Image 1 (spheres, helix red, strand yellow):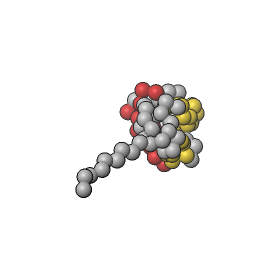
Image 2: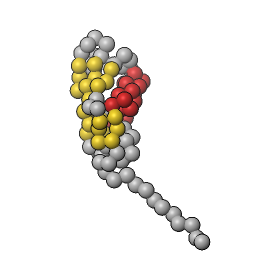
Image 3: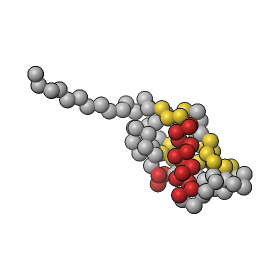
Length: 89
């Protein structure tokens, strides 16, 4: 019997990331960009849609809060690192 091949793709908006996944990833990227000790607070869940903007709050070591925005580069939840903006200490 011939083997069948199946292809799976994420339907836009069906992947949901939780804050305990997104926050550490953003904190690591910010630290690598010269903003160590910045904490990030995101909504409990974020629906992933390629090209859509998501918003979290970044808090620098001095207590300053900034709006942090980023976009997803794929429907699987990969963050476009070049799109991260707004963090400040």
